[in-house]
Length: 421
Image 1 (cartoon, one colour):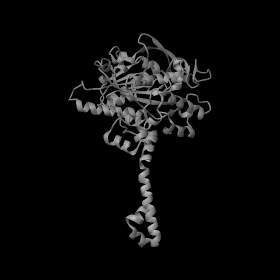
Image 2: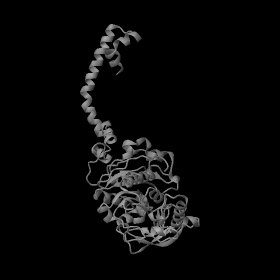
Image 3: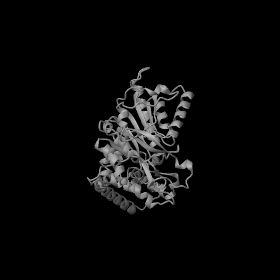
């Protein structure tokens, strides 16, 4: 380009700044023209190569300008060159990698949930009239721990449903809700619905639940830190071992089809009799490896597209442990169920427990290009192999991620909120 400008477009300026010999000037001009012609001749081949290798500039501009479904664009460009196998469903390319690759570490599950809530709020503001409750959308948080996502939904104007089996976590959530209700007039208790049950594959029985009030509370007696069946080691402090309690199990289908009522709680009675649910705008599932059982109880709602947005934690190690199945069989089964019902999947950043982090695996987690997002089984195995590639002493929980599923006819989520929500 320098020679094209200097010797063809503006040769006089070149002569003033650096007077060349006339013969050399003509030679450069001739060479420049030949190079330009060669570039023009090679352009179609370069263009085809770029389309096969990655998203083209035109494709990205098309996404930004027309706000098209990014998964569609990705599936016809990036994935086309690699997804030749028909034995495993496709995990569609990730919206963050296409448009927000520079922010991949700052946009996780909490950000996605917040942006979904803001999208729902916009819809409700357009449809509602003063004192009109019929336009309020529904949001479910399954596996709440602190109830933060439930409160975000309630503050955005949703009927917010919180399902948490841990007695200690459930008590903490009640206190947090009461505190928020007393500190602001923007919340109304009649729109917050709390359930102390475990979402599972049936609605008749009970499950053993290990509770210490921490983020690792889980169904069944398992040593989650060492990823083994059975009780934790005797040398563990009592507050880490937790207590085993019996908790009733309910199918999420029964919630969505109005067969389960919330707990009646002192000071929160108003939320114990919500109106019937027609459909759910957003569902978030984080149940420490129990997700396959949760989704077994969600078959009707998924098949009938009763939920617009489903976000679930995806932890192959934990799912294999709690189901007793092959790790990828248990994990991939959830995503296959969603894909076969027409949902579009979006991958989110990889995560690891703080005690399992080091500089090497931190770089690997940020390496989107190495993840085989075109194949569910391959991507699951990639997540499992990270632990072998970057072992950390006395750490066995491995890596996990989150997956967003978008129902047919629902718009993809446009990332807007980065960093801590």
